[in-house]
Length: 53
Image (cartoon, rainbow, N blue to C red; front, side):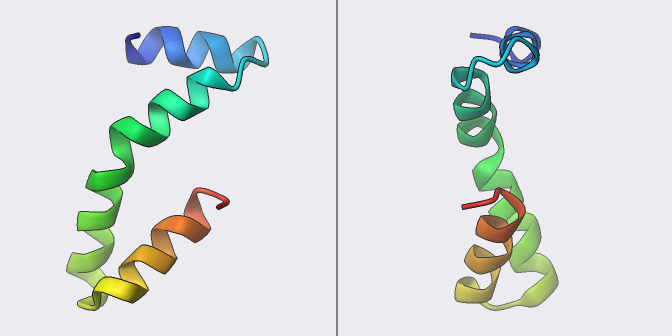
């Protein structure tokens, strides 16, 4: 699945699009959060809050 297909699926209400996007960007989000907060656990918490988990 490509990003544009995932977005199209989400627009149609298909949650598999969200799953794809979360998996694709979770590591990048975690790395960015860590660079800001400089604490691994806090970075995980920030990313989990942003993703609604």
